[in-house]
Length: 561
View 1 (cartoon, rainbow, N blue to C red):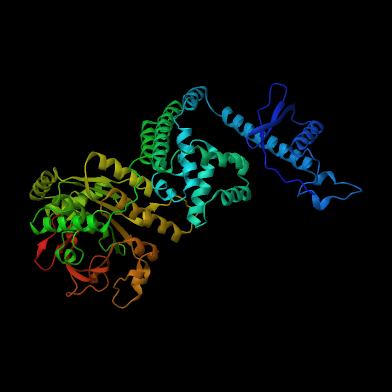
View 2 (cartoon, rainbow, N blue to C red):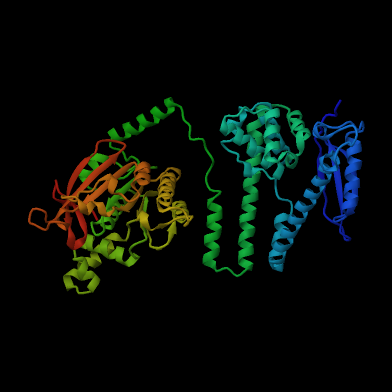
């Protein structure tokens, strides 16, 4: 005969003034024994392990783990006994608690008195609901399907209790992997991961299922958990600002940090699901508004032949404009930005990471006034030209075009700035000049992976903020190798990632840059290389180098710029 192997819990408390620790053993949530002894006293630790063994297995029959090492004459070598396993567990717990205390002490030594005061505030009565957290976990154990609804609003990090957080993370992982979620499989997974004792053992998991009055309230429990999590996050963001202020951070740094923290809490977590009926009804309403000539969402580029292909640039879309250097990327982006700003009452936000604000404004003034851009840069103007520029400036006073010319931006910075402007005024368009200058969050990643993440996050930003995003991009040198030098999708740098996330890809080409003859002078071609909404093809426009403008070739009209 052999004894069944029991599961038990071991807890080690902090050391007292003379370096003694209290060790508590529980079985099925009930305390078996506790003892207090010096951290480094191996003999007492061994004796306590033997006492615990006696209470766990009073029959003294060998357990399933001991049986292979047992013989009638010599018994069982100590290293294979349950006592040895219990003693090792106590020692491991000792070391874990000591390591945590050491880390805590090191962190405390680096904190100033003012910061300690702030930390005391943070640690005081943080909002959470233990009952709601247990309700979510218990409901999931009883009916795993509710996890699909809970996951729409609640994440593992929303749980305040670390054990609850760990347990929920395992549940989510099982659901994601397609593993059936029941108590037995959950316990096996936790045991294999070494987390079973951390979450409270099998007895705790059994208790969770018994505590839930009704599974139908699972989503309400999860909303309480999420609400408490957001409240804690707001408190932590506020206290972080206090700590930074005490530490001497500049006002600019404080504003940037608190905005980044608050932005992470901005916006609801939604599933994005809508039934076909309401979706078609909304689209039909929009179509009727367009047929009646009423204003609709989205803006056009202002170039008629291009708009004939792509229509309006709508909320959530990412439009990529690719070209070789000096082909007019910035001019195109500025032209679209100005056209959008004058079509709509909403503002346009232009991120100019290549040109300074002054250089961009010079281009806009040149285009609006008709004065040669070089004469403006050189400050060699006639009286008439000066009057034309003043008139242009007056006409631009009411144009809602915001310019951000910070040369170093990550996608997170761009998203935060966009949200900040959007809180002040609605946006009809965001222009980014250009994607190759956006800094990666992780500079150690391969460049292709960096660009893939940047492109994907820009697309997600467009969808989350419900605004079209026009992204300028540089083409690689392969364009120079062809006879006609006409660009293709494959010429986009790291094109796979950019092309995949773009709704529309436009490629700019000016033949005169390669062959300066009379036939090519002032001619520009815009290739619609990708278009999720319609056909692809080529639009011919006019390039006016003196003012860095594209003009509508078909009607002989200048871009409204």
